[in-house]
Image 1 (tube, rainbow, N blue to C red):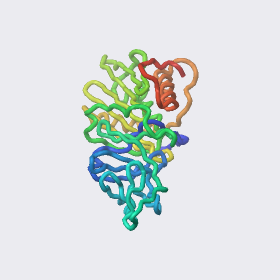
Image 2: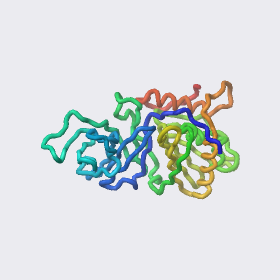
Image 3: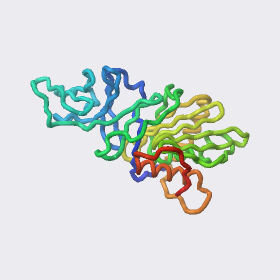
Image 4: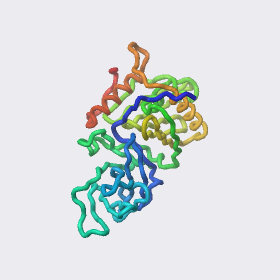
Length: 296
């Protein structure tokens, strides 16, 4: 299979970075998010915290062999401790802390069995400007992880594109009505040739849910580094058929390159979806209320 590079697409918004089962109380794991190294941990209170990865003493990666002390994470190398706000709180061999050294904090949230991280792409906007994706509760079941080289934008587009969605839905499928969107959600409904409904909802920039007759698929995408993406999927209903369909879709996407849509008709709902997504990423605060996306 020939892999086509994505050209370094960067997603801005809520990104899924981990499954909850990886982080018990006191758990510490390393993360790589769009080329950035981070550390994620769960404090003794049960709260999740994330910082840039490297200890500001001698540069050790806090995600490897770091340990939790209260709500802080302690470096394995010389024992410097860092608060969730990125402040140095303890140096074992010194009665003072180092106030001049800080580590950048990141905002995290838990939804539907996943950990999400707010990635704005700007140090001036560290706090989330919209709520984390509201995933269905049944997504707390087991997640399947895949990694591949692909443009992350194309993976979610596949879930709103009838040409690719038929692999998941089975049979022919046609658009039913005009796609609708709000500041955090894009929704579209299809009808199969047997009349059954298939509904897709894309939640923020990296998460989508497809619901068909007797089954559902939740897809969460984390751009890791360069063109590599980590894909988390959770399925209800006919898991084997949906897994095979997802593998086929990812096989197609891995051989694709992201292209601007040509002019003319016949590009719905992709044209509406791309317009909504561009607005979401360029205006993180968003707009309240529902709207119909019809512009290119």
